[in-house]
Amino acid sequence: MAYDEVIYAIIRDKKSDIPSMENSSRLAIYYYLLYQRLGQEQDLQHSEALFNAQLTLALAPDSPSAATAGVVGLAWLHSNLANSLVSHKGAAQISLLDQHLLERALKLLPGKEPGVHPELWHIIRYFSQRMAIGQVREQLQMLIAELYGRNASLGATENVDEQGCWTIPMGLPGSLTSEIVLLAEVGIAGIHNELIRQQVHQRVELLLATRREIDFSDGCYSMFPVTVDKITYQPVFSNHLSLLTGADLGASLALYKAQQLLQDAELGHIAELVGLNTILRTQTAATKIEGAQFCQGAFGVVYAYAQLYSLSRHPAYYQSYKYWCTQAERWLGQELSSGHYERQPSDSLCGALGIGLMQQLVAGAEPDISWYAEAIRACLN
Image (cartoon, rainbow, N blue to C red; front, side, top):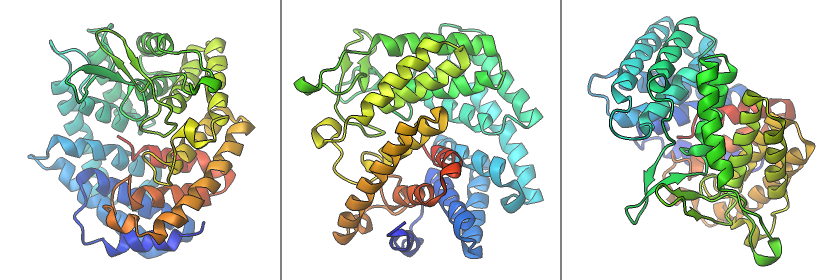
């Protein structure tokens, strides 16, 4: 992909910056994906150094809760790259981290407060990355039983908006749709399947209750809102198609995953209806996309279509994936010429790092799309 070396240089030249704990894991994944593509030993060394530093930090007695967001990336690296990255010492540290995070999760279990603590979702995602390991699977089973066995009606994640109102976020990540995807994956793996099915069913019902009829002629493009008021269930809609400020792409992903778990053909039909509707949205008025960046721009849309194609193998999603790759590349050239990414934090998903991660996905072969997309997903909150 064009501009690969330019983005690499921006990230490399700012390597003296002290990345956040979360972004250390993202950088480690970025350098490993580069190593997989290009075979440069220095990239593997960068990845290993970042991995080890983040692992040590996550195990520190005074490790802040913010460190938990970065452990999902560590789990992905350990699960996929053990032969290349994880030394015997690193493997022992991962086992210690498993126990540390399980203990942390049990302390975060809901009491009188409604909803699930955001940090707890990071920990569930951490264990879900490594469900193939027997001990990890047992730890995840224990956590799910403690979380939902006592409170089967536990609600979806809630946020406080700028006006101080409690809302349920709908767009990826950290939202109702991302919860559906994660819980469905846990259930599909056979962990407390019936308990998880109940949780997914509740969330799908809430999601579908927010759907509206659309009319492109009236400038109404999005089927799902970006937030829903917790008390009044008043929805807030946006025509943004992006990963963070739109909801339709995430809703389609969630419904496909729910269909796999619940074996409900109607959910598959709705997922396809929502997903294929987004394909028709290419004009700026229908997408609000005006740049390349990952969080609110074209590369986030590329990522979403990569995930939709991986789930459904529908050729229309692959065509849209290629279309948005072209759009993203065009905007990226303009943004690099203006020095946009040199003015942004190099280790941010909304800056050069997000672009760099997506460049690895786009440069990969079609059969590898799913693997690269899952690597990038491990970088999301």
